[in-house]
Length: 133
Image 1: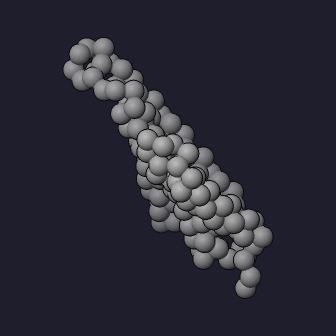
Image 2: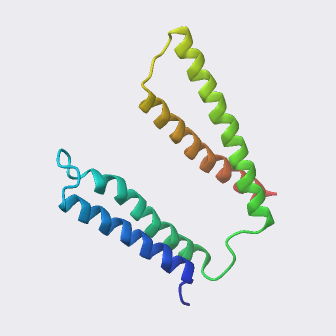
């Protein structure tokens, strides 16, 4: 069973990102911190390599999604969006009340983590719930 062309292209892009990060680090594009390009490009490259490998291992030549999985993904993202907005409102209220003060960088990092992990958790929960029906 061969790998889909789409996966091969994604893996090649991931390798390109990794090599670009390494090359820019060795060229010292940012002289004060020469590993900065690698730190930004390596995670993208690794994601572009790992995701297609996992999808190929998991699905092979079969379709990756159908109506059921699309519904689960959509509902998971909707629930995640609602939770993320609720967290943002709570952070705003706590900052306004003086209970907690965060930097913009910390706030954005928290919001990104909440949005990402809550979507994965909701989708996993909904998938298990649908499988048990």
